Amino acid sequence: MIKEDIILVSLTAKQIKKAKQINGERKKITHCLLCGSYGQIFGTEKHCRKYFSAWSKIFPNLFKASFERDDYHIEKFESTFDLVNILISHDDKLKNTLSEQSTLLKNTTTKKEGFFARLFS
Image 1 (cartoon, rainbow, N blue to C red):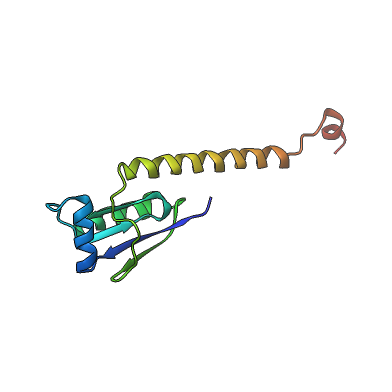
Image 2: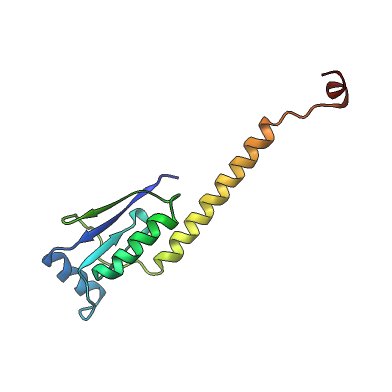
């Protein structure tokens, strides 16, 4: 699985307008948190920064780097529903895969010796 970047974006006036049209005019939107192919959230700087700081530390298996940008091209302006659960699910799958690979590697590299090999070595 390829690691993604997590990016905190300060939105332009045009981007804010588009995000509000899609997510709700009454929402306070100034920033976006892009989580690679997993999705994104829109909100205030405080809201997005909170998740930016936490998720980049909590999910090191998913995110390779974290960046802050003032001007960044955004393709989709809809917040991803239940993004935290999506991240948890992908992180759990990745941890299970890594655990299985580690166990498989351990089993193939461990040389089991028989009785006579231990006796005469």
